[in-house]
Amino acid sequence: MQRSHSDIKMELATFKDRYQALQALLQRDFLANPDSVDSLVQKRSDGVDALLRDIWKAFEIGGQLCLSAVGGYGRRELHLHSDIDLLILIPNGTHDVHQQNLSQFLTFLWDIGLEVGHATRDIADCVANIHDLSIATNLSESRILIGKESLFLRMKLMIKSSDWSSRSFFVGKQKEQKSRHLNYSNTAYNLEPNLKESPGGLRDIQTVAWVAKWYFNVDLLSDLVEKKYLTQGEYDLLIAAQSFLWKVRFAYTLLLNAVKTEWLSNINARWQRY
Image 1: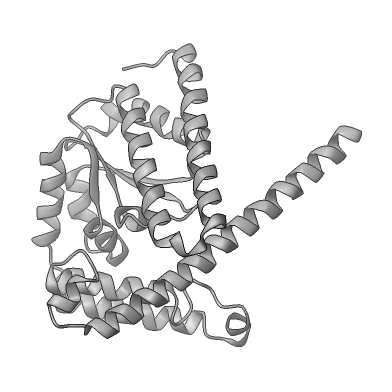
Image 2 (image 1 turned 90 degrees about the vertical axis):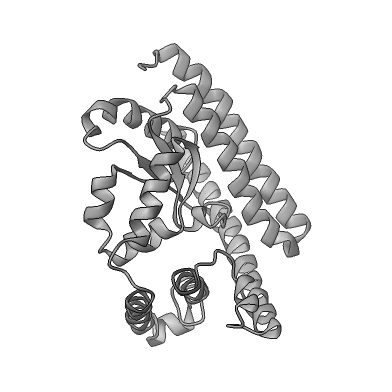
């Protein structure tokens, strides 16, 4: 349904205020108690879930499409300024039908401050791209937010029937990890390690979860204790390491955003002098 300019302008202010309030609350909670970071990444995910569902309804996109979270957002691991990775599933061969409304929807998300990464695919598109390891990984972590559940389930079934076996997926992820370690293990990156990509960083923990999902068909790292892949002590150590990295990432993001805000303020002040 085509949205009027006045409707969009009114809704923009409301949703933008909601999102800024969520971000401010998360920042205050972290500064008050940095050890709460595990719950905060899920709290932001839950808050963005509610926001996206309400915006989807406001745009009256309809029940034939499906909005899904993928990637870190699909895992409900959403840091303070992390991208919101979305997959919009549509019926086969309907790209042209939905292009205008979805474009307007996605532009609206950017306008309220969400940094969105997105793909719009039908099932045929998913089948054509499932051979790509990164796409297969993203789709495996997807969860439905709102819309046609049967379309989402068809996509999930397509993943299970793809050519990716647990072994081929493991080998692919192993090669990907080795390549990443080579890229981030030179002297410069050892002096300034990348929290996500460097050896021992968040990507390595995520790799454990990805492989486990394909091999054991589980969604949570804690399930690996039940599967006897990890001991309770190993699991506790892994979660403690993840929490530490999350805490550093959250703090770094706050600091970076503060510096960016101050820099922009200084630029605006200088511009106004002229």
